[in-house]
Image 1 (cartoon, helix red, strand yellow):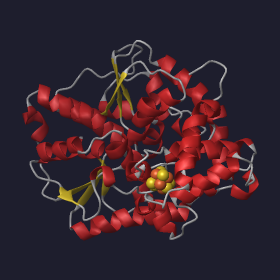
Image 2: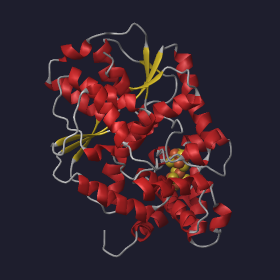
Image 3: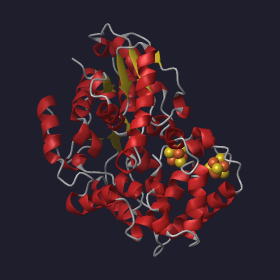
Image 4: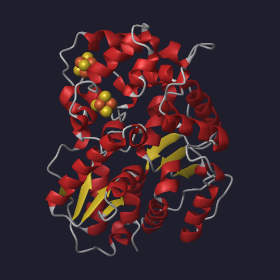
Length: 381
Ligand code: SF4
Ligand code: SF4
C-alpha cells in the first residue's frame, strides 16, 4: 500500500470497477443475497446497494439519504461467489459505510461499536481478559508471554460463548495436541467490527497494532472464522502484513488427528444425531467445509446429518455478521430462523456450527434450540 494514501484511495479502482459492472448487470447475483430475500425487496439487493454506493461516491445521492441502507448487508460474500466479475460487494459496501460514518450519519448502534474501540480496543467496551482468565481456570491452561503457536478465540467468542473456547482447549488435549500457547493478547480483537462499521482508517490502525502483538509467532490458531478471514484477506487489502500462518481451529484439530493416535478423540459417542451447518466465513471465506464434518464423524463415529438447504460455499448467511444484528435486527432474526427451520426439519438432535458467533446468534433467536459450536461439541468429556 503506497504511503500517504487513505484506505478509500487504495480501494478506489476496484470500487469503480465493481460499480461500473454492477450498474449494467441484469442482477445475476440477486437470488444469492439472504438479506434481500429476508427483506423481500429489491432496494437491498447487492446490485441496488452497489449502484447506490456509486451514486453516493459521485455525490448524486446524499449520505443522509442513504443512511442505514449500506448496512443492510451481512458481509456474507454470497454475491461475490455468484458474480462472474468477482465483484467484492462487501468491500464496496464497506467503502459506502465509511462515507456514511464520516458524515456522522451511521446508525447509533454502529457508532457505539466504534466508540467502544476507543475505550477498550474491542466492540464490547470492556476488557475481555477476565473472560479469558475464566476459560483458562476451567481448562487448567496458564497464560504465557511466549509460544510459537498461539490460540486466538476472538472477542465475540469470549463475550458470547466462552464455553466454546473451553471446549476447544479440551478437544485439543483429547487429540494429544499440547503445543498451543494462550497469551494475554489472546484476549484482544482483530478489529473486524471496525471494518464492518465502515471505520476504515481505524481498522487499518487497529490491524497494524494487532499484527505487531504477534510478531515472532509462527501460527495463530483462530476460533472465529470471521476473524481468520479478516487476518488473511482484509488485512492485506488495507496494507497490513500479518506474519503468522492463520489456521482455523477445525483445521488445527484435523491436522492433530492425522498426526496423533485418533483413539483418544473417539471417546464418549453421544447417541443423538448431529446436524452440521456451514457458515459463510468458514465455507466461503476460508473454503473449509470438510474438516468440521470429518471431526464430528471421527469424534462420535457417525456421519453428520445434512440440512435440506444450500451447503458448502453456497450456504446462506444466518445473519450473525456484518453488524446486521445491530443494524437490521429483524432481518438478522429472519435469517437465523431460516437456518433453525432447516435444522428442525432435519430431525437431528443437535445443530453444530463452527462459529461461536453464529451459534450465539442462533441461540439469541431461540434460546431453547440445541445449537453448539464445534469447540463445545468436540470438547465434551
Ligand atoms: S455483483 Fe456481479 S452479479 Fe451482482 S449485480 Fe454486480 S456485476 Fe452483477
Ligand atoms: S455480501 Fe451477502 S448480504 Fe451483502 S449484498 Fe452480498 S449477498 Fe447480500
